[in-house]
Length: 266
Image (cartoon, rainbow, N blue to C red; front, side, top):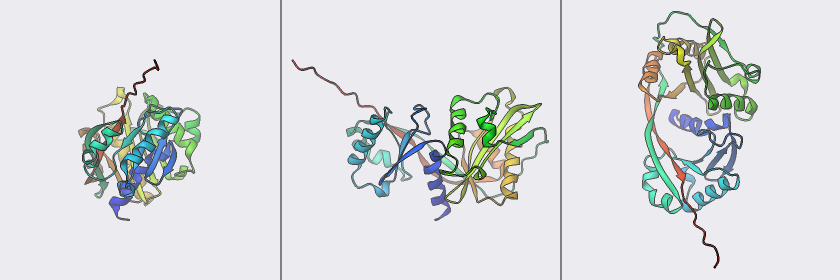
């Protein structure tokens, strides 16, 4: 596989860390019945090159998610403008389409140039730590707690614990910054998340823990690392770390929105 293909596969399979999966010829139906609202754990990932009849595929997706009490959601494949080109079929099958800005995929190609003083006590968080309630950062959100707890439950199904790296930076024993990444079975290192507790933002702690993570990648000779940024601040941190723009991937979702009307027999 090319580098892009490995990244595309890692992106598609990312939910396997913390979601259950139902396989189909046309893709994978991810779900988690304990957290139906988690946006990364409940959606259909479809492969455009394996679809010959989109209507049949969408009807199957709808039936599956409705059978388990979930709202059917479809994420776009890696084919550019797939949702736009097939908008009429999605609408016919009851789906409304939302297009987001493309994912700006970046790969690690240059040396790290993050220059920060060492202020944090950075520790690797283990599965036992997570099971015992150790926090990723001080004010982590509920969906982060769910993700890490479910990831630990899923160790061995997609990746082993040794292939998943979770680090927290402590300041006076308070978890103020965290970063997590994993080595995908497709042979790529996926940087999955980085965060700073709200009370400690703007102090460079995210850059400090990023530098530590990149040092781990070098020391352990991990495969090429990639990620994508959500805002300008994360982009600047990634550039200082040595990441550079590689390509874009489509983003968005098709949400099942049909309202059924029933008429009582007269």
